[in-house]
Image (cartoon, rainbow, N blue to C red; front, side, top):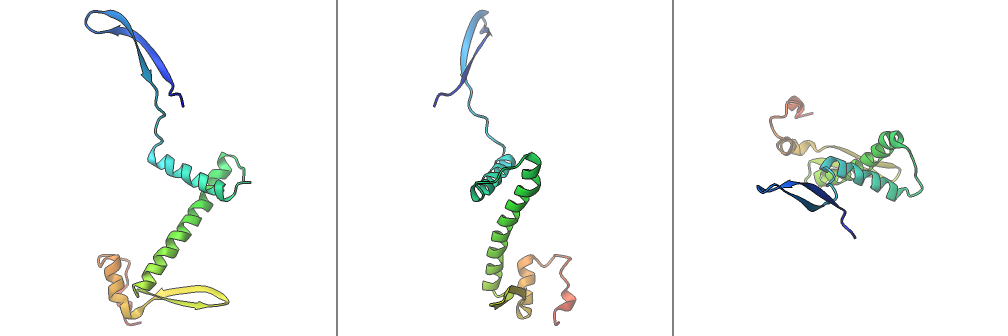
Length: 128
C-alpha cells in the first residue's frame, strides 16, 4: 500500500533558502462516535447483505434496528445477571416469552444494587 504524500515549498530556516519538504499524509482517524456509528451500519449490512438504502433511510430505520438489536442482547445479559443474583424472578412457559418481576424477598439487595439514593425507588411498597 502506498502512503500518499504532499510536497510543501516555502522558506525554511534562518538562511532564507527556498526548500521543499515531503510530508506523508496518513489517513485521518475517524472520531469515536463516528466509528461506532460506522460499526453499527456495517453490522446491519453484514446481517442483511441484500439491503440498500439512502442516508435518511439508514439513519431512521437501519441504525434504529441495529441499536434495538444491540439493546436486546445487552438487556438479555442484564436480565440473566439479575435472575442469577436473585434480584429478579423469571417465570417461563412454553407458550409465552419469559416474564420478569422483582424478587420481593431480595428488595433490599435490589435497592443496594441500584443505589440507595435513587429517588425513583418507592420504598413504601416494600411489603406489597
